[in-house]
Length: 488
Image 1 (tube, rainbow, N blue to C red):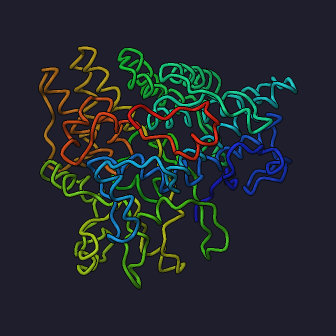
Image 2 (cartoon, helix red, strand yellow):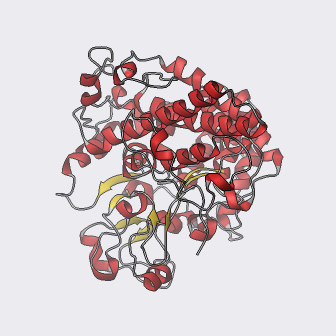
């Protein structure tokens, strides 16, 4: 079994101080007594538990980031979460309270609140050692990450960058999208300047300056700062700290976790006998919905027919991404054809090795890490930013890096050669879909490209759907300080 670190239980209560909980020794390999740098390092470890919270990287994450795109449909059975099918597949958004959307909002603000608590503590104790500065940088990265999710999903949101002492302190007006992006940029730039380039193996999963630069590049890309995005991507690429795995398929297995291609993962763990676990429901909620040996999950968030039909001929990424009812699982087993009566396709990127299941008797693959940022994304962002900057030669170089790895030596996926900016833009968009299908990028890509209405309009999408309405429960508790998103 692999070793996993930074496994602190998530804190799920919105706007509640984390100090009492984190005074306990972290439930991981490293404890406060083992730490050698940074006076609050144990508390910072707790933030990685927040990253693993269901609302941050579990089913609510899949719902907001993937199920709303043309890559996926709600899945499962018609009677299982029927209301969510209307939201995810037909854009009939509901501002009333629901556990998926409310948990997404609450868990992100819990993470932000916990970051603010740590930063306030560091300020009050004037902690400025070299280790403390790294801890501050980790904290600011994770806060910036949480706000990036929120601003992409909801648009303008309250900017809380201070410790909450009384619940009423959180009742503030929304900041603009531009203000939120400025704040995210400041947090990530600080993180990039002060985080190390790597960690020892016993700290697998901790963020690095490459992680910060990679996410900051994405922030720049969303703002159409092509030069800024390209510069940051090339800083990561030229660092030599990351590389694409030889096999696309391997990245989504246990062997691919915290690998040279990984830049940020929510760290999950389940012991071999299932008695110890730190995980969320991201994998189990998407597992094959069957019976007996094929009762592997709830069957939510499944590939759409549109995604199945979108791949180029022979693209090996198709079989890595899509598990077919009645087809091979890639490990020597055949998925029962009878499961096609529930769903014809399943998300293979959350599918576990049957040998692991057989050896432990555990079927839901909740031990698999959730991939949140990977090196291939940095390369694809570099290709896009280069093309938009008018440098087709550089864009083609980066695009070929992705296609070469994808084809794996097979005579498929011919190199793209066009230097026409519009044609190359279309090729890059198509490549992003194939490379990151079912990984939470597609919906936001369509929105930022201005393609969402064209691609999703026939399913009910309108311009107001680019931002999800703030849960009405949150609006009500704000006592008039927080207004709903436009048109909702």
